[in-house]
Image 1: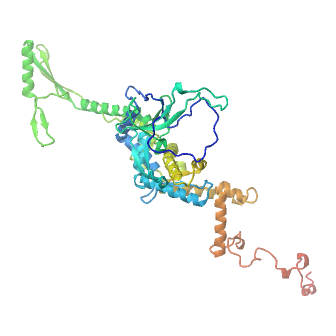
Image 2: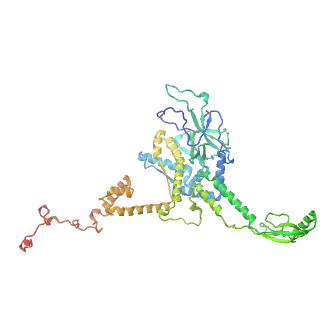
Image 3: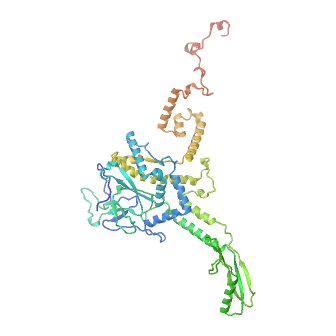
Length: 540
């Protein structure tokens, strides 16, 4: 195989070799397998309209221009990318990562460098929308070859129609048998992965282009894959049929209303016993005499008489022989029930269902309920889960770029990254107002339940159980809260619970005010002492 353009991240040490297998490892990014020195290509035919992936991407982009589809896409992107003007849309979450605080600090710094290279603060909406429509997102990672420890210096967007990932398989003639000593199985041919880039676009069986190393490209896809044709699809793919149906319904509705809405007249002209040619001539003379076609020119504002053209919306002129009812004029009624749009609304809802957007968002007049969580519809909950899945798939872009940064700068090795990768999460900012309302309602319900269970604390439930199960406090939160309470009691901001009367909630002036008897008034063994004068009075 020829030399690849770009670079590869090499392992610092070789890991333990895996056992032999006769099955080639499946590629999650729908890479196209090709034979060494051969041709490759993909084809997809949906109702005879598509040839390859490029045609699909072109169709997805055309769909995004349609008003209803564009509105649904905006709902998805706005839900996924939130935050105010000064907020960063996404942050890295390292609470589960078991490394030193210094390493965590460097990881956060490199993550913000990645966001800076993407200009994510300003272009987050455009980048996510582009990925959602195309189903693929490619970036070329540019580095300083002379000084790779500088990390990524620039990220350049690559059109998905011009790049494709392939897996080149070795030729059958070069394949060897299984070595009984080393147990190296050649039943599954060895392969090499790389990208092919052609600035003119890759279509069909075209193989010409620059071979690029896989580590030099950052790639994120939708996660939707046609297993039969090995093609990555966009989330808009499910809406192709629904959108086409909506377009046809709207076009047919317009044609019907234009052709059936106006009332037209039928002129029956008595031609007597005239021969056919004379009758036709007489009919044309009558038409030109009485037909008045006024045309309004919207550009100039003029009204003129134009009798050269006859459209399908004009009146009908029919000859009638002698013996009939003579010349007659009748009127054809216009179309009825032209105000019904139930079929259009049905296909609009079908389009929204295909895009996983709640149908309630289609009605612009409907108000969004900000009340209790019990009033949130099931569709909104499903939509929120769908957006969460989109965020996770999109985060693969950050994962790849962050890996390259950390390895190139020597912060961690490839082996260390494989151990840390599963513990690095990405936290997208939710809509502040709606998230605040939800958190307030959840906390209110927890406190109400806690107040109900509080009389049973120490009897059926422990305080630790109430904090863990009702308030959902973690061990770290419990330790931090206890430290804060202790500190505030020492500083005088809070009163010591031991000095508060549990019955009244008022502070105790005397530590013995809870019913304890002073020591000077009790005898040995806790028996109350009696004054001698009381004995003389005979009271005891």
